[in-house]
Image (cartoon, rainbow, N blue to C red; front, top):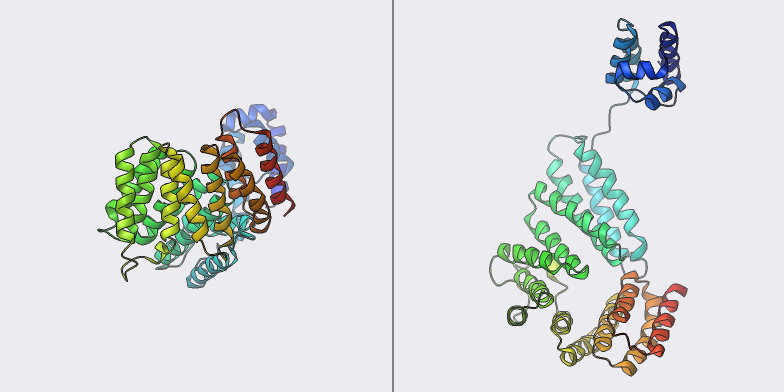
Length: 376
């Protein structure tokens, strides 16, 4: 029975029973607005609602029977299969290839939309036998990419939510490697968002599962050192950073996961600079972040922006106004090229970290730098 015909039937039975709409809604234990939409033909009732209305109107099964043809006509859900696993992995590969820093800030909506589409169908049980683990593993990887893209677009609450879902999906898939990867990204996001205690717990979790002095453990030690510095534990923070440097000096091994590729000498310098700034060692932090910028390959467009933005932060905290202004002149065009919302946010964060006596010229330079990004 069409929805409007069902609604007409309910209304005619209600009028015949001399019941107001509100009286029938009370008798059927449903919302009056919901009942009004049913009668108007704009709301599809559930079987339970049809049963409640049938009972309240004394329709002897007439309304329940009227629902059956519609239920039989509903199409069975299309079940996910191996082709969908390939489709998800293909989407991941495409997103990674396009995440160059030029359009990464516009990719997150595609990643999230695709994740939600497949995740909801998987959660509802709409998949063929035997394919669930592969679907979950592929979705965990897609969730990781979506979380990273949201992070880079400076949509931090959404990034945290997506990465948390990706961890759960990896756990359901039994993909321990991906679970550790995403947990490390959650620690990164927690540090960026000012939650050092949470970052410390996440880093400890990854380090405990890393299986010895591997690059996974080294990455966790970097996060741990950063978090401890933010929490004011100087000796522990510096010890963690020194241990990480020692492990990484040995280079990569065949047992190291592919996702540890990003840890290199200049990244370690930048992490230590972050820790040094948190500990008040501003001169040391400026030197480290400058060396990190100088050593970074020129073709890493987005990292060129992020590294410079953090170097700006160190310069501002150190009160190096002239150097800060000079850096901003260089950073503006780079922001326009890279299209990095996170880079823009870090520039504002650097300015916010300054004392109240920040020169007006520096404020103007920050605004001009951001205008470059907006024009780009």
